[in-house]
Length: 456
Ligand code: 5AD
Ligand code: SF4
Image 1: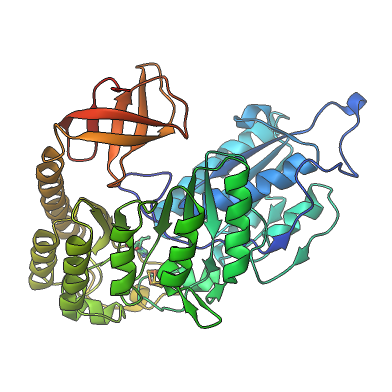
Image 2: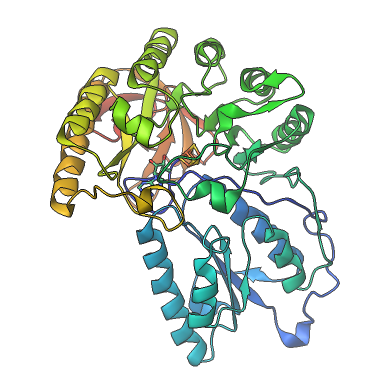
């Protein structure tokens, strides 16, 4: 799952926003009176799509409570920082924001600060709350308590994330499972997001039917290990097949190689409505490291999955996550990763330098890799991925593509879209997000394709 705040991106986490809300727009008992002026709130989201989705839910609560949403801290009475805890630099960034918010508080601008998301669920939140005088700290399991804080009636917690996504928007995230049952050596997610909880198939399908009816054209199924979804004897492949019959365009993230079934890979090739893009984090190409990381598969098994994908989805794109410099990683392990990168010919990869997270097994391991070595390995993996991605993207030059517009054009007149093969495309069009244009690919870089004027 891609991080929404950094490049290369990362941070797969599940939402556990388990709450039942009133209908959006329903009158709020505590909406401010005209004489008080409208209260304002600003939500800042760090991390992955799960957090973006959680922020959507919190946005709904603050709007229900009568707040107006603003984009800058200076204009906000209430600031909500919805945070990521996957790597230490994510925490450093949030500290910077908390410092700035305290400065604004002293100037009498910002009145209340709430810290939510994965840092909120961690032990570190207590120190941060004390240090920065944060008014409200919520973890990922009790986001619903924000309702009371903003003056709404108390919400009821449930164990299915039944709160609908962003109805009426051209694209929507739909959480199908939360938490994670793996215990990867380096990963803080299981301790901040809890164990896996899967949502019933009918509830997922009903939500998507509602979204499609209200105009959503693109649905992304979310889960920390989305392909581990199972419920009432049904597995992820069954759910994906149902969703692909209901939604006009579907993608899912993030997957775990141990859960990825060949029939799911084949389904991606078979169903016209599924975007032909697979994100399958491998983390390392060395069997020794995969074992230390407790990933539960060997490099050869991963390679076999990729062979199935490439055969079933010849025009598809493949991305992955790789960690360099995990404790104990030798030069030989690193060579194995470079070899796997070459064999799998990734179209893109999110590459991370190992970041020790307190409470994880890897943080206690000896065999730290010196920073200079980590940096060199990082650049070597990056170069290998980019060279390959560039060569693969060149093959798309000259092809005519149906491009789904994700973000409308900016000042340079270019919109950002996505092909059915899952390539990102810059295209010169005024077309609104959610619509399709047909355009020919003129040129390509390692990360993106460039199209000319739409042909129709
Ligand atoms: N250090 C570096 N990278 C990490 N990731 C998760 N935890 C860490 C860590 N402690 C990466 C993994 C995961 C992605 C979301 O973030 O590659 O797939
Ligand atoms: Fe973290 Fe591993 Fe679970 Fe992914 S599968 S969320 S890396 S513990």
